[in-house]
Image (tube, rainbow, N blue to C red; front, side, top):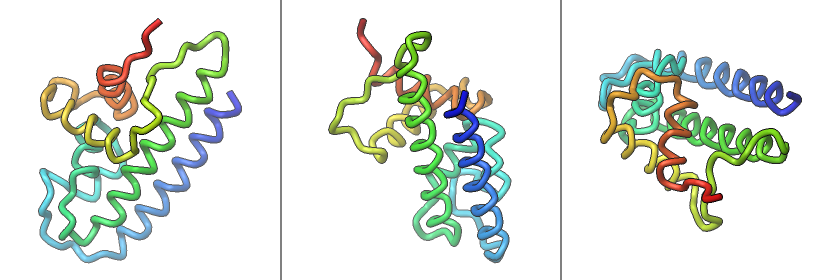
Length: 138
C-alpha cells in the first residue's frame, strides 16, 4: 500500500508540473495524431498514445516525451513493487536489456494494432501491451 500511495503522489506532482509548464506554451498548431493539451489528463490509453507520439517539432514535445517516459517508469516501478509481495505475481518480465524507449514503442505499436483498447485506462493498456510482448512464463 505504501508504494501505491508514493506512486500516486509522484504521478500527481509530475502531472502538475507538466500542466503548469504546458500552460506557458502558446497554442501552436498540433502536429501530433489528435494531440491536445487535454491529453495530459490521461483519461484514456489513446490520450497516452497521443502524448507519447507527439512530433519532435511540436512546442510541447519535450514535456510530452518526459511525461510519457515518466508515466512508464512509474508503472514499471509499481509492477516491481507489487511483485515483491507473495500475493501478487509479476505482471511483466521485461528482459534486462530492454529500454524504456522500447517499452513505449511496444505500447504504441500494440495500441495501433488494437485500437479497440483506446478507451481503456492508460495503465491497463500499458500492461496489456507489455504482458503481450514480455509475459512472465511460470
